[in-house]
Length: 313
Image (tube, rainbow, N blue to C red; front, side):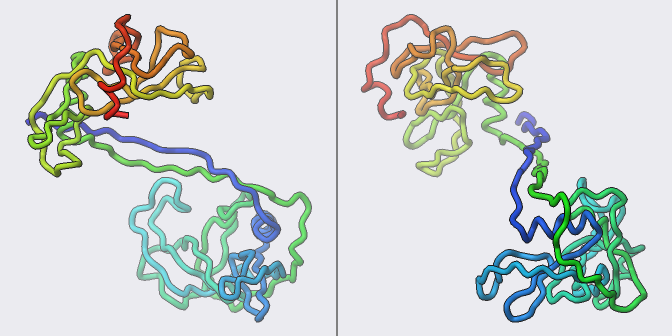
């Protein structure tokens, strides 16, 4: 059996959000080395602060400063820090109830090892040298031998408050297409489109899936389809995608290749976008060194009859 393909992939995008008055004050406070909580109607102080009481759902906005010292309520040791985590050496994730707060804040604790960490230990904030108004303005917590700290009683009003944040969302993973799609990709490199036929319903799946989703049976019989096909449905793209060197507008379509049991995706070229239509007969256009068709173009044949492709819409 040929080796199954695999490749590292990254999904990454910047997530931008605006801040309400409570979160704005909290993050601006961190920039100024002040930790703020919010007081509920029954007198509890929540850190980090929220805009609605999680118990009563009442709107809350009474800001109160708490101390940068506190007590570990629970913890877990991180033996292998990952990219983007607060520290690049082993550390403890801790929940810290800051002095003056009734809830705990999750952050990292810089400690020499798990034996140095315990529930009930005293810690304090280690501030980042450069701060911008983000949770990372707290670089981490560190062990502390002193007693409860005394906050200065800041009222939560600052100059130039932080009004929004941008957080980078990222997912790193290794993708494998599996046996069936590995064979499909390798055949595409030879400019052949090969699907797999279900032994029961006889539908030919392109791209193949390794099993028929309708019958639940494994598919192994390979069937070459196309190269020509029929446009079943399509859309006109008017927004240019980043890093995609294609002028807009262009057409992206479902194409039922001759002999296939369902349609695949492909871009339509070689024809004005407003002349693309259902039933248009097309063929693949390959470019040098490309492992898949660059686009599909009209063959010049008469349009296919609707009855021949209606089951693949």
